Image (tube, rainbow, N blue to C red; front, side):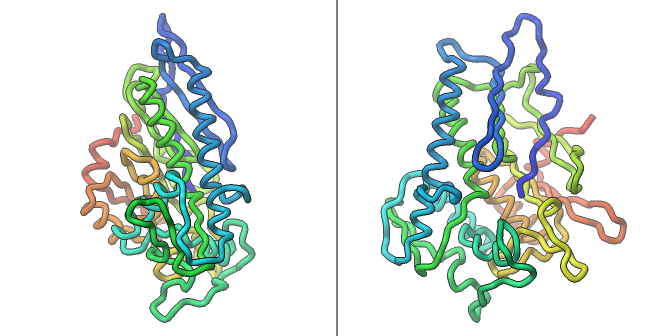
Length: 338
């Protein structure tokens, strides 16, 4: 689950003689996108920006959508072989990010846990409270895990180490799409924008109100949308991972949709959400998931070592409210709600 960021009052148009901001939105990848461009540069038309957005979304779906049986990743998942196969730059980029974050987090991030998620009854799965697959003696999945893929040194080929492995990048692909859109905006000379897709946000420059973009991190409450705090983004992305919308209660305990690849079960900590700010939306997405898995102590320690801007919101069971931890990098981008 990715929290949808609340765009703060910075979006309000100052009006006057300034041109109206350009707004683009629509459905994509099982969710929606929203793009605001403060002002079109000379020589760049609205149609050109829409073509950039449409082109990126088509590109990402063709290569990375597990819902499209004709996509590259669907073909890779259907392959029952451990032979190395050629992969596109798009799939190579996603796998490289996943491998890097997996290594940094000690295996807390894993793009092969899709079958495990389904086994626990999430993501369209029919499971209930226990995974369908048995664990190997060391606790890792026999068909998945952070080191079950081998990407060639040049990135041109990818190999499964077990034929049944499946990739699920639906949690990181929206961030990757945001990165591509903003890279292509930058190349066109568009430098004042906010791009949001499926809860992944990246902003640069000035909002229509003439100041840096501000977005609100949500209070981790089910069925409500309230701001918890504000962050200011300029050349930065924001991603939040949480368990407050997609969970079940089993035997009196909360069962999260977020899986710990190291134990093959739902995360077992009191974190309600983790927000990560990073120049790359795809990396922010991956780090948010990894830190959610690691929990408030180990996750905060890793964020500190890596210099990540991260906010951890933890449930305080005895009082029924929240407590938080954050890194100095996050605090530098934080702004008061008032």
